[in-house]
Amino acid sequence: MIQLNRRNFLKGCSAAIAGMAGAKIGLTAFGNVDNEPNQRIIIPIFLRGACDVLSVVTPMYGDDRAHYETARPDLRIPVSDLIALDSQFGLHPSATALHDIFQDNKLSFILGTGMHSDTRSHFDAMAYMEGGTPNRKGLGGWLTRYLRSATNINDDAIVTNMTTSSSRPRSLSGTFNTLAGSNLQNFNIRNDLHWQYRDQHQSLLQNLYALDDSFLHQAGQEAFEQISYISNNYDSNYTAAGGVTYPNNSFSSQLETIAQIIKLQIGLKVAAVDLGGWDTHDGQANGSDPSSGYFANLLTTLSEGIGAFFADLSAESTNYADRVTIVVMSEFGRRVRENAERGTDHGHGSMMMLIGGQVQGGIKGIWPGLHNDQLYDAADLAVKVDYRQVLSEILIRRMEAPKIGTIFPNYEGYTPLNLVQGVDLEPDYTAEFKSFLPQLQK
Image (cartoon, rainbow, N blue to C red; front, side, top):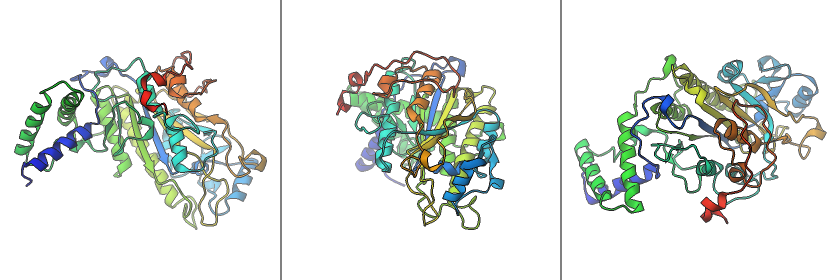
């Protein structure tokens, strides 16, 4: 048992403030979803490493199928293994849970998306994309600018935004406060302390932070309010609705945590999730069966996790899924042609997925084609749809946030693709980010 000495006291103090990441406190409870002021939630899931989207949604017929088979003699997925989506495209057989949502018209695959940048660097591409500023860094994250510019956010919400990563992603970088953590069961004061010492520890710290009204003291008080609320309401033995069982892996556990935060009705607007491992330069699939192997297993994790999460939110008497828009994206795609190591190298064009109760499902976007003269640099899928166009429609129609010029500086000319339901507010292309992110103007 760890004794309550000066060293452990100070370590607990640091853990408390770092764990809450400055999130704002104030509301004790909303009572029910109809009274919650923050009704709608955006959940970006970033597939880090550049997902081979051509193995997720694959041409089944015609010239594109012939070009695909020529480019991928070992990695091509047999037509007989694909799950038909429409008359042209099929879905990887490992994504059956996604197909179930697609059949309910709650999932759209947006083809030909990406960023008009020539970089093939993971780090640069992620920085540009999460910043919302292709070929430019240093203006913070697009989600931060959304949160700072939105007019329908309750400043007294207990948790406005969160990430299930151990650190804040670039999309949430800047000045807005974020709750970070994948497991809220341990969101407390030094769980390795005996309960008697922990209570004393917390009491002493709370008294300490009540001595003044400085920023530091206010942050400390807010941390304890948030710790108290979440620890008293978060259930480590959470039972999903409708008999849903989440898969036993980290990604699904993170989505399960978000589901519980959503159902606590404490003001959540943004929840950012990462799933890495998509940099498949070698060993992408099994030699004898290209429909199985590393990529297939990772896609299963993505598909089943989202499937359980969406079913959990949909099964409640209050349909939380109607409030949620999940957007799945990756920094770029991969080469059309496989390499000598039975993998694929860094590419260009990609694909996005939208899942939600108000998503208009189907095959969307613009298919770029696989003929040599249709490829970008004669090697990659071309970008036909700026990824910011997709995000802008979510922001305008679902999040009621039309300040596109602030959220995506220098992006103009937005037109809806009819991906989600909602009201078409007039886009505001005025760039206001300098007024509330002065320290990020560099």
